[in-house]
Length: 173
Image (cartoon, rainbow, N blue to C red; front, side):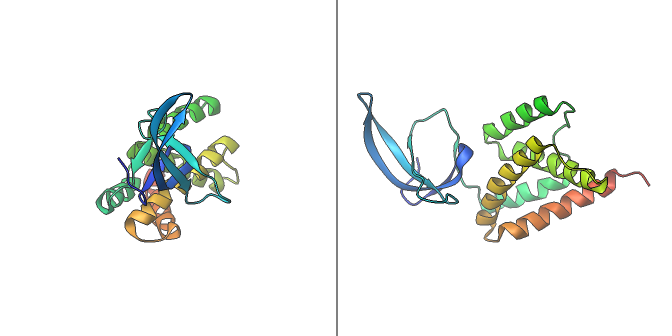
């Protein structure tokens, strides 16, 4: 269970801070709720979620050791590329929704690699791929930055360096 003041990953909203833990009665059922706010929200978005909510992922931020391990994982292959854009989006989005950071990092790696490949040929990623990449990079890189006590920009630079190195290894001479 989280405490007031803790940070967590909350499904699609990314990193949230626990502002309060309180009892609420909804439809005659009283439960304990987390009162959260996404740290990147513009305005005053507040989320109330039952503590026992199994419909969303509520994860602790990764430790420094886990963050370093995850960062190094960008040196290795990503997920398999799926040619059909609609099927690819569904499959990759399903991976993201699991909350498994190692698998999410593989999706980021693959999409970043495809983006670099496309740019080398004067092309762009499919819009759905670009949006998914931006969203998961934002959440994952922000969490890595917090866990490693650095900036999102430095995390991005390290990851892009790993992706470019692995792209060079794949290219025939």
